[in-house]
Image 1 (tube, rainbow, N blue to C red):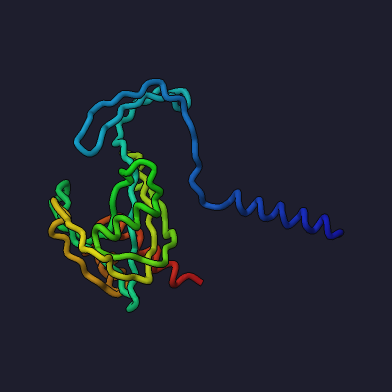
Image 2 (tube, rainbow, N blue to C red; image 1 turned 45 degrees about the horizontal axis):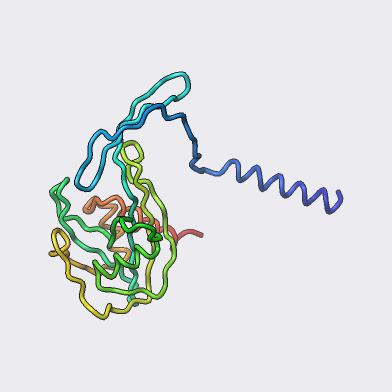
Length: 206
């Protein structure tokens, strides 16, 4: 076998492996009608009629601007959790610093840096993507970008928080403690669960 033939075979094997990878598949369908069904204070509900195969389907979903969240790791290798009241579930749940992509043209990383300052009074020198997720794809088009932040310093000023953010409670916990809280079912915020388990998997995978 020539070097060229060997190279062609390796490329074919790589393409085959890539085709077998577990991966979401983007798919466009013909939208026959799209209406604003409800205009809310924060979220809108859209009703769309679309062709799918031989059927015509109607679905309603929440239009969402997108969001960011930050898994913060300090010099002692602890994770920053914040407790905040969430009215739809009437619970003060533990979660990550997070916020909406509600500033026109603001890239997700800059939004994450802003939210970290606003909710935790922190600036991070090291940033990297951790995961990107659709939080509820059957009922919302929300996509959230989760970043990992470290090498922390305090902001020059303490941010003035209001509404549900006024009584945020911060707590630093070892990652193992956070993982245990997730697996024991003591915390339920989906973004928090995904980020904690992703960080744990990242550290423990071969």
